[in-house]
Length: 322
Image 1 (tube, helix red, strand yellow):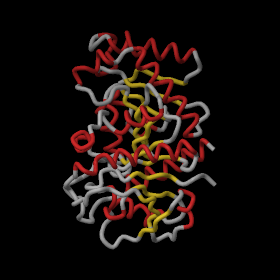
Image 2 (cartoon, one colour):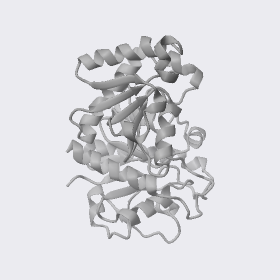
Image 3 (tube, helix red, strand yellow):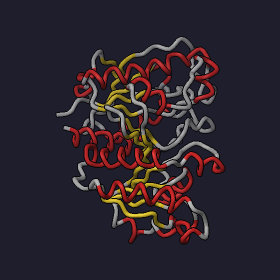
């Protein structure tokens, strides 16, 4: 049996505490996980039980959320992040990393954070969760994957302006993204010979140079080199024909060149159930594919589907790693 999954509290003014309780109700004891946070931030009347060590999560009754206590200094009104709590939000993430590095947890699932609140309240110097986790792990480069039952997709460039994509998309970057993706599909998803399709950057994958030179000058040479090393790569391909059902059945993962090229297909296919996975870390990290949703926090209407899917995927990946 694998160790339980560590679920961080994220921004306590968001929907994280609410969907943690709902995810426990949905999963019960069939998928052991524990929540790291302050039970004072859980919705009123929530059933929870404190634990002193992660392994105790498996002994908690199915109707109660196992909580590894982490006290916060301030109360937390839903929808209103409190600067005084920012340092503890960061500390919870670091605590989860320590637990997974020690083997006490099999994976980390992170609830959404609010980056401005962390910057204002704790001087958080990272663009987001992913970069902070990479720093804690001592890893130079990680890759973001979005996944649902019908699609796995990786954007080679992520949160940058579209105008900066061509200059950022170097052969070195694409080479490392493809290598990391291939290795993770083998190790974390149990795919012995992953089939990876690669989009072009320009419409029609450049149409022989008529619509841009990057597809032939940057993307194609990387694919050719890595094919020679045994990777099963196809591309560059026109992105507009890569995501219909028939095409998706022919590959295990798609690598796209920029944020919207990757995220629009998956959010169209499964908006509520998409999972954010960080590839290239020495430990497993998943996250629901949504934000803090301050506008609905505390109203009891938040959908836990993406968190449930993220916990299930973390469990499947942990079992694949053994």
